Image (tube, one colour):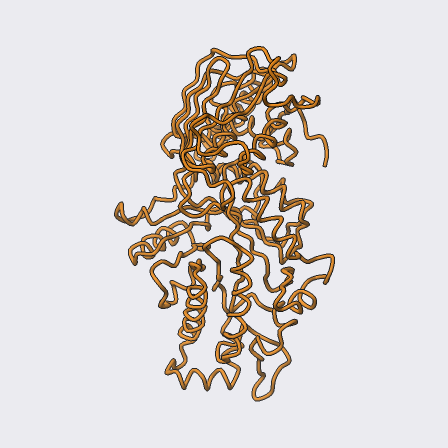
Length: 539
């Protein structure tokens, strides 16, 4: 009987999916078509024609940002072809007087930060009102204005004859969580610069605001350090073709800034550092077999003062290259086997009074690393292992949860926030793992605040992150594995959970949004059987 019930349930679900496919085939969703869902949106069926030759962006007279604001000026240039995807004629000048009744998007910004960088406290709230002949976009900051421009761009649609329309709409919007990240791993497979930049574009369409660049790891060290050039010349897969030069890094940071995205660099240690040792002799711990060195190496040697001198110099460079006020120090998955085998490390343990508890040795190392970054005026983010090993770290350190069953994750959230630390949740969104079928649903239904704790504790959960680890991912499959599955997490991190709890309601919206991503050149995989009016046109 139970098997029959499950079978009937699956059959009903498939029938519902087929119904939605047919519905999507014969209709176009014009209203409430913004992804992620705004906090408040109301639309009417009144619609207004948009003519690309009669369309302009302009600043309000009272806006703090005015022409010459590089961030918004470039956004206006970028969004025009995104809104009018088929329009190929030269764009008219902004102040041509022969326009008849132009549709104007008027942008008002309270606080101009046109040459700055987004940070952890940047406001992304905005208000958007669309009526006949005009859209009024008001935001506290340029970062909120960027989010409003993205929402407006998604409100515009075409009919079967290619005419552009926008419905009368009012939006009041802000993110639920301040940290909404995407992690890319560029060590296990090198990702060409164009793949990273394309991911940043897609992130902006989904309103993600943090690019967590897991730039180095055991397999390779592609970051080209000006202080220690041997790290990449000897540690990268190839010293010239598979590295990120200082110019490359600056380009990524600049591309991200223009889209309101922070770049969070991670240099994970003391583990995950095999590639470091190739270019920095003496950094890693020599492993022993009995009383003889085995010829292999383990984590960074925490017993050598030279290790901390090296790290201080490296992170002095890193913190000058990456402008964000946070830096990720890693601290996960440290294998103690090599440390245990090394007589010098054992002697250091005895000297420090650590006994045989090697978690105290890792604590000693990570505490030193956090202090190094604090001395460079940066706030550290570390993986949850640092907390689990009871390490003494400043209360402003951010903990990053990456592992555990649902129950263990809830317990970790409770414990970390009870201790007063801020938290980023990544464990439920390891989307490098793939399942056949509608696996976006499990990412969509995550409840980040579903743990035992006070309201004050839950305020310490500052956001979440989608992780794309690179064991089986390179530029050939990055985009389709990432999108639109990451979009499900994007809505969970931006939108009101009460308004976006139904996967049934989300499905047609996500199908529509996936088609929009395709038209913008993002290789987003399909959600189910069906088609897009404008299929992907190639790289």
